[in-house]
Length: 349
Image 1 (cartoon, rainbow, N blue to C red):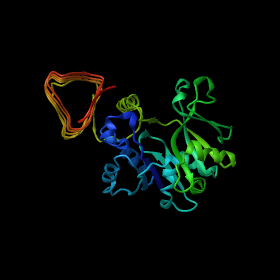
Image 2 (cartoon, rainbow, N blue to C red):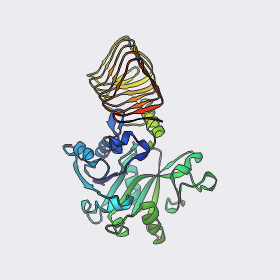
Image 3 (cartoon, rainbow, N blue to C red):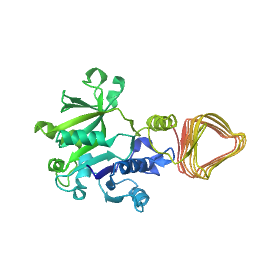
Image 4 (cartoon, rainbow, N blue to C red):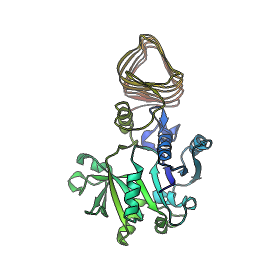
């Protein structure tokens, strides 16, 4: 049906600074797996193994991450200067055959969408473009691009982040698309061009077969700290169907190579990464992620924290509602609440 996809991976992710000063947004770990890796594995499930990505911010990390992945044919187009959502797709035009349908998906959102259903709808409508749409609470529509469709699912109008009282729909654009290669006719070469501002209005003006497809599957854009934390909790509570590289246990998941002492007290859910050690009398509350190669020393307390890799939490430290980046040590008896810590910066949420 569809064998190729493009992953949009060029964004700076500035709302997640300082985390994204050191790691590109598509490689932000969710349940100890980079979100783009989760997306790649999801595409593979549907037989999509030819994947191209546009990159820009900290691009070499993305190139290195996927260059030796034997499960996919991975290529990338580095953008020295960003060219917009549509402009970035245009730069990958060479990757797709004339007349071919293909997927475009964000590299920094988490979804378990059934791709076959949207692909089937796209083909049945003989559409040039199909957008996956998701219902959100009406009070949240001001955060998204709102899409209005007719009774046949044909898109009739867009509203970009409308005030709640002016919103004509609570269906929003997820940034997951099925395109036919004809879409490239609507994107000029070497121009900054945007889907929402330029391409989609042109499709409507020309009365193209341009459809929306409502999904009930999980989707969340990891664009803010609150969304990032919410996505992590959703995985711990099994609200999203994604594979995490851990084994089940009563209080969450852990890797076979980690060591959790019997005296550790769990009062919630946790994910513990490979080669990590949790020592005696550590208390873990709420929903926590502990990365790979971490050491949590005796009597430390963790509550609703996300720890990346290679982190040491010394004895009697107390962390609540924190996100800790790679290669950080938290000193003994340190008490932190609501903070983001990276190797180079400390800032309040």
